[in-house]
Length: 462
Image 1 (tube, rainbow, N blue to C red):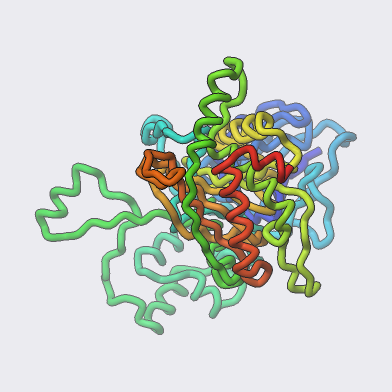
Image 2 (cartoon, helix red, strand yellow):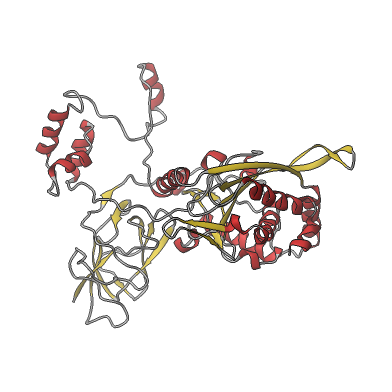
């Protein structure tokens, strides 16, 4: 029997995914749960397992295509009825109320078609990985592009229905097919429709050249400059960057942000770290400033639960969370992501260091599961890795606090009534002023700073 596999919702309400690479081809015989392809969502690169055992009869998208959830992805020829996998609808369309087509994934109805996106550059052309001087090599965002937990995107309408030649033609004229579709309804847009719309609104003058969307070749830049033209490069807003922007706007216009700063002498902490590293086993997790700050935050949150709460506007309640799912901002080649360390408050320092190291390795490989990118209760971002002292981090949606770590600098500082060279760091705390007032925010920040200034204080908080 023939069976169509529709792209499932890969988690947290995602609406589309880009095909990174196929690991099978038409005519291949596959087994149940064999990996069919790697697909990239707004959160991570995910391996897509086969829901059936059988022969691949068709692949409905190519590498680089963006496929909406619920659209046909793979055609199968199956011998008999699959007993271990749920049955997917035979047609390309998902009927209202139909069940999921893969265990653990639910396919959302969609009549959209795969849309071609620009092919990604070859791996050899990627820039070399930067070696960081930070504690656990967690790369994080700058203050203006800080930490974002990717939320489920808002419900959006279908893409305008048209053929690739019509889309290319509309693009060359500068006509937005979404606007054309708004006038025509749900029918397929034709070349004549584009011309008619252009004449009505005067989008561009006749024969106006299209604006290029591809980056000019390096050798072409001098020629353009010689003609007096100024080259531009257009970068598609998609994936992590797209959802980062949406989350930033959502957070900035929902929660009233307040940021407070505190500069602290962390010499005792750096000396403790040096001592622990000197006595640690060769295979022991590497403890750094980020790890110590994470532990200090977990201890302080127990005394100031407002920073570990969330605002439930619909219920008219502030929800205090008596656990710490700690987000650690990490900048990867795909963009900024914030993996979560679950129940971080239960971990001793060494276990917390191991969790941060594992989080980093997984994030860099692009294999962070979507479920590990949502649900944080408080977040950290280490802007010090860029040599930055302070910033105003933006709250991840749904969270009340985020702490930015500045660079640790050796500088003259007052110590025991004298001036001495000390290790100094600035902490920047942003919080939701609906839940936390200035006094509580300042007290929490001071509690974290006190642990860094005198690590022995952790025994009092613990």
